[in-house]
Image (cartoon, rainbow, N blue to C red; front, side, top):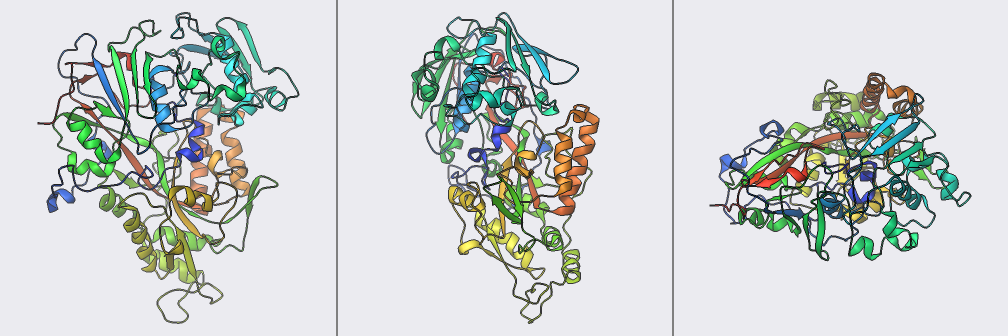
Length: 606
């Protein structure tokens, strides 16, 4: 996808690196005071906002100047890695940089489906398995060489190579005919990939699936004339990736300050037209100084603005705040089994403490996520009802209420299921009359993390359930996920945990809830879940209405079975300097070559 926003959040977004902490950014400290340290009034502190308060597109005011220098902040508390090629990178900061100069060959619409208006068009045969792609004639690398079908095929050959060091090789690649044989070294080429001419590529997949139309096709070519003589095992560390990367996007790299900043100049030969800006600088901005950087005009905008800082800065005069629904959700998971390393699949355990669905339903009814969204996040996060977020409007079931806040119903469910206070201490025992203590794992990462965890613990206490923080404290991001199970080892001390997912462009949830998914941390599996996940990715699901019905059933199954409680959806808030024209936060809507400015320097806060 050439210059369109957010396409980097494909299926690989579900790798550990993009698991979201409670504050949406591990290590980014939430703060309820602005940069000057002024205290809020009581009225201001209670202000509640809504995603509906924000526009997707920047209001254009003024006339564009010729050229101009755009300044873009990447909000992160560590340096960027500098793996500046889509075929090898995995970090979010690197992805933000790559988006400006590289691009992909396919564009997508607001429903995350690929379209015909990208740098390449496509045709699909009647079987739904054979895709023929045609790269436009005016698509060229920054060094003037044309982007070819050989480059596209070469990217697949590198990613599928046994010596490949990146993270891209996944089920989407395995679905290509001949890929597994090539990957294992049994074949010298990939039988399912054919270069028909300089600009035409044909890929044959083993199985037709709607996922191919929404993120399942790898659209990032690799410049063969540059990489062909570099051993695959050394490509990621090469100068072609780290020091002198090229792409075919609207801007090309002029200089790199490792870990800190990248300066780019316009690509006059860009296939969609010469960019309006002369130069773009991208730099790392610490979360603690992001407001100051915006107020002083150090940057025009940022890739992500900490939502907790919005209430104190909503009236910032030199920017306009835009907003969109994040492709993510927060959830509370129940440990229902373990990971079988030998079979590489989930192994449910009916003896687990949280195995009783009635206990799980009661715990959902006991928590007031409407209040959480308002009290902790000023309405910029709000109650989630299902496990497909509204960022996927075609498939999100907005009419499914989920399980709503009803503590009296929670108590009734627990009573009827045999969870009663036998010894009179106010806390319920299990149906066998034994002490019930539920260990709750939650992450550190911001001022709100501990009070939020305590809010849930108190809500469960109010219905008679003794829930306590694992080890009596919050846990750092990496150790948290190690214990939850990202290595396949599930800490038996954890009964429930709170985390979040950044979802893929493809709605298919098999990567996080499938029987064969390592990231299925609840370790939930059932025959009905297997059936629905298979149907949602089947050839029959190429019919969108059929797929909608399948995922509607799946969302209800997750409400009925409660392997996890979806807690909150999220708003993504983006401040943009008033001098900027033609800017949007709509998914795939940002045409970087069209961005312009009305004056030489960013407008400063008065």
